[in-house]
Length: 178
Image (cartoon, rainbow, N blue to C red; front, side):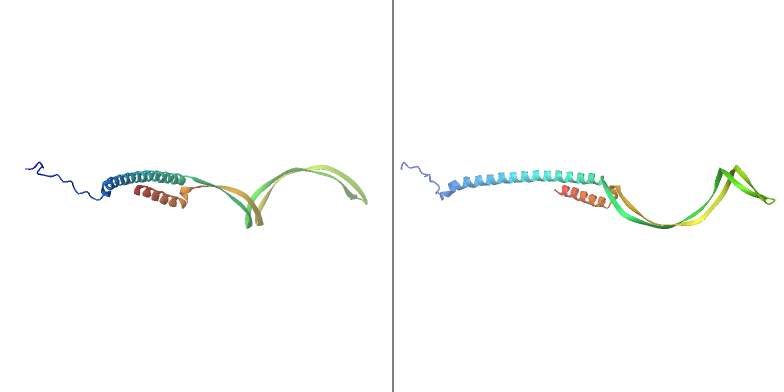
């Protein structure tokens, strides 16, 4: 027998040369792709959390805006015509208390001659005079109005409140869907 072993070891046929370096390269690319996908997923999850917080803050600000009061100043500059007839019916008493001085000369004819009689006196008058007024007073005029009216309007009492509530609810729904 010969010195050669019975079983000969044979080497596997060598494949193309590129397979030796292509497999580690493909494995490296696969790991790099996996790492990039993980970074992308992490970034997207972080962006989602930031968007949820921002939407929640916006919904809270809209709710706060619903509790606000709009403060407005409305200027009014116009002429207001007034054309009315006012009935006036009133009864009242006017008290009169006064002294009337009388200083005069009264000529008095006596037997063909005139005698001048000087009179100097005071008359006291004390009375009450009833006054009845039953009339209508027409008023035809125009008044110029120039003023600024402050207005405080609660947002909850306006149609804007329903719109803000729908917007807030839509934002909360959107936040939950993220």
